[in-house]
Image 1: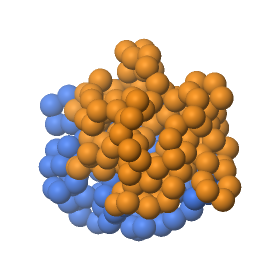
Image 2 (image 1 turned 30 degrees about the horizontal axis):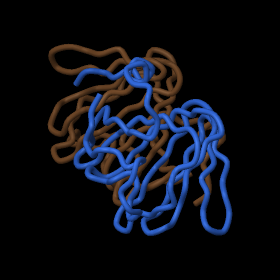
Image 3 (image 1 turned 135 degrees about the vertical axis):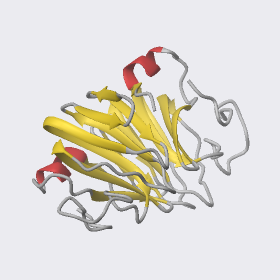
Length: 120
Length: 120
């Protein structure tokens, strides 16, 4: 029941594409992630995924269109929908998703695949 | 798969203590709420509840202490823990909690009890 200061948490890591859990709500994680560059195309067959843009801007690419997301905006990617986040400059994102979700979803594990459950 | 602009959503309502759902992640709701004044003491026996302060400040009172939460800070109230949010001036909060959670939890329904599932 301690509060969490988001800026302090971001100050504790610098790597991109590595979500860090800062809180849990039942079986769901609240995570912070820095993103920059192009991620991989993937989907999460069984989980929706929420992206809340805290700083910077990013683009959520879908197969048929893309959505620009800026500070104070959020987007939910429904389960099963292929997507690829992309950021020309570094952006700071909050994620809400079920515990255990792998960031690269159904894509083959690779350099961008982060460990699950890393806390900060 | 549309983005949601949080400021635009807040502009769509003015009442306090009435959470509005702006997105869903699996069986969980992302809600916005304006709070001002004292809420009622209550707990949620089966659900954790996340409060993210977007604007303003609030106090989360527990029976044995209280925590001041400002912009860019969050707090998770675990299931079963009595709490009472309070804000001297109006604050804007994002909530993340399981669908169907009643804002006043196990307290008797009253003026502060909001409808469940109201979207904006």
